Image (cartoon, rainbow, N blue to C red; front, side):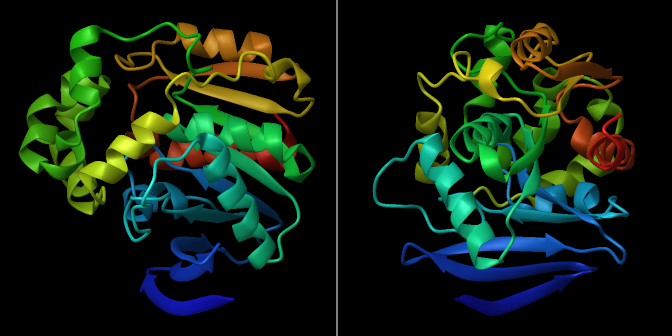
Length: 276
């Protein structure tokens, strides 16, 4: 049963429920006239609020998002977990909300979780959109210097670190969008260092390479043309492994969901509603 400890952020409804006896914080955005539902898996260390601009840019699609264990308002578990745990948690949340099938969107770390969800709960998936992500262990890595800065929790817990390293970390136009990046940084509440470490541990050794060709559903792969964390080549790998996958390159870096929220939401919405 859902406990309505709801906060209202514009039209974003944030609530807390219990899954397997533990609190899980989730949000719904349900614009008037929505005909489809999208389940969103966010990036590593990123809470619900960090995706607010993107969520509120949808016009005809209902969006469901949740804080994974150790992030935002979902407590850090006692033990580490795998992506299969996140996928099953998402499925349990859908059961509570009485939602049978959804379109699935995942960005960066959340892209891995989205692939795992599509693999384990294929019947529930109507389409799959993967943004700035990879097949996991089989990937083309970004620059080592960037990756070293990416894995530290400081990029989410230290606003100064985020602002000083935004260009090197995320590429694209983030360095020129200081106000937007500061708003994004202030919205983040990455939880605990342990929670962040657990997210990193969840993807260690993980890969979707072997099961992607078995996913017979419409799939859109979005990559940033100037992404120092996940180079565009990874999008080509994803699209080639997906039976019905197609790749599009966004004129930005890793954070196009943040720097281009309206444009990205419109593209995803068009794909969901028309398959184009």
